[in-house]
Image (cartoon, rainbow, N blue to C red; front, side, top):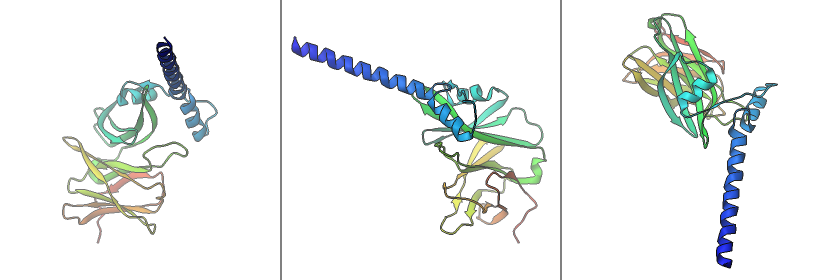
Length: 229
C-alpha cells in the first residue's frame, strides 16, 4: 500500500509539473504573451503586439501579415526556426523579394522579424538586387543578413567583403528558387558593420560587378553595366 501511495504521489507531482510547464509556455508564447511583450519593448512600442501562432511557417507569416498575395518560393532552415522567402505572385515588371524569420515553439510556429523590397526598374538593367536586415536588439534572430536576387546568369558566386580589420569575407549561398529565379543570402557576424562590399563573380571567380555599402539598412541593385577595370 505504501509503495502504491508513493507511486501515486510521484505521478501526481509529475502531472502537476507538466501542467505548470505547459502553462508557463502558453503564457510566454500566446498572442500578447511575455515573448510579444518583450518584442514590443525592444521595438519601443507602447502597445503589445499580438503575434499569432501558426501550424506551419507559411501560416505563421500569413496570420501575422494578414496577406495571401505573396507566394512562398523557398524555406531555409536556421537555428530555432526557418527563413521564409516570398515573392508577389504574377509579377510582370520590376522585382520584389521578402524574407520572414519564424521560430518553432512547442505550441506552433511564431513570426519574429522580417523585411523585404520592391523595385520598379527593369530587372534586365541590374545584375544583383540586395537588402540588408540588421539584427534586432535583445531578440534572438539569425540576423544581420544580406539577401537578394541574382539577375545576371553569368554571376555564379557572391562574396561579401568586410572592410573592417579582423573580419573575414563570407561567400553567399545561391539558391535556385524557380526555373528562372535565383536568390542569395549571406549571414554576417553580429559585430559586422559598414562599410562592406558585395561582389558578383563569374564561374572563374572573376569579379563582374561590385558595390560598397555604407548604410546598415541599405537595399538596392547593382547595375549590369558596372564593371571592374
